Length: 76
Ligand SMILES: [Zn+2]
Image (tube, rainbow, N blue to C red):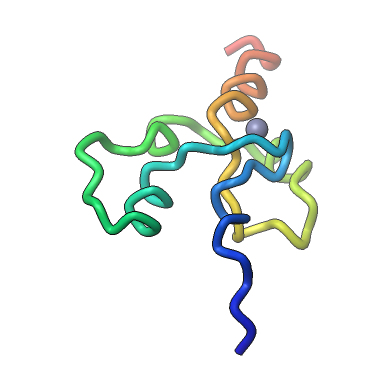
């Protein structure tokens, strides 16, 4: 088993910035995060997920900026 770079899971596959997913922070640091991750409150729509390269799917979280930008562009 080849250890994939863990650091990639906290990089947004769409914009390349840190996604700040609390669940990732918790996993990496081992420190329980007190606030629920923003991603639990955001809807990731199919269009947005479609833009994630196949090799990055299910590996990295999309960041808050990309998620909210997608929602905003739909006028919600
Ligand atoms: Zn992003």
